[in-house]
Length: 342
Image 1 (cartoon, one colour):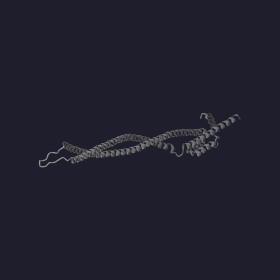
Image 2 (image 1 turned 90 degrees about the vertical axis):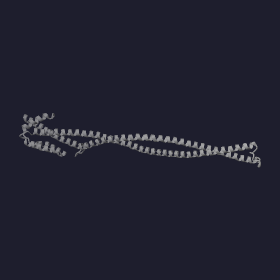
Image 3 (image 1 turned 60 degrees about the vertical axis):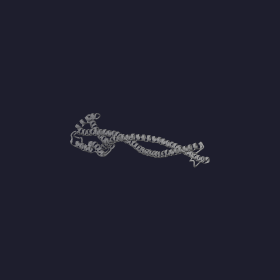
Image 4 (image 1 turned 180 degrees about the vertical axis):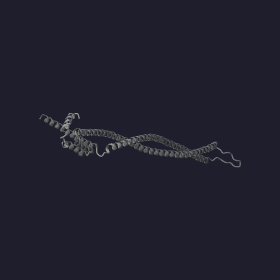
């Protein structure tokens, strides 16, 4: 307006002077520009403006000011609308980019948390299976210990009885040998009644003593072997029980450690699930906002770039029309000056 202000004043004065001879035919270029811009953009407002300009040219004594005012008003409205659309486009572009980035971040967080949860749950299942196996093995060891203890107790009870029997046998044989040896050592038997006289039989006594000595040796040997077998069985039992005790301690420790790990993992799983639920809620909010942005920014009959191109074409057509109008006013002023000096 500043650039065209002087020309407008001169044109206004000229149009007042020449109003009686100026016709709408002289503004054909102005109407052509407005109509062309309206048709190209498909804008009903421009088509309506063309009708209003034509009416102003036909029915106004001072058409220049009226037409210029109509065109300037439309330019102002279109520029304001273009500015609003540009601001809206910038808002949509910025908010959509930020919201999309947030959406991707939340989805990445959910994926990461889900991976941690799945890994932990898989580990928990594995650990529970291992603990169950260890508990089964501990039960087997306990069963073996009980069985071995029962066998050992039975063996020991048999040994105690055998030891007593062998000891009693050795003691009895030794007593018999003592009696016989003492008897034969005295060199005579107890005297029988006068009517019967017996004499010592050294060979018979020696045979009996020999038999008893063999019996004593056998009883002693069996007693020694029984004691050795008992000691060996007890040592073997003690060794196996110690090994089983050590193995049980190891397995119990393993089961305890794995159970503690299960507890820690289950706690972490619960915390990660809670975190994932929170992130999911945040993602839902972001998706809801994105949906609203899409409705506001994307769900349009034509994209912003097309609207911008159309708006620029409209403004260019109107400004061209304004320039034509101002140019004609300047031309009339020049004609008037020539006539004045003629």
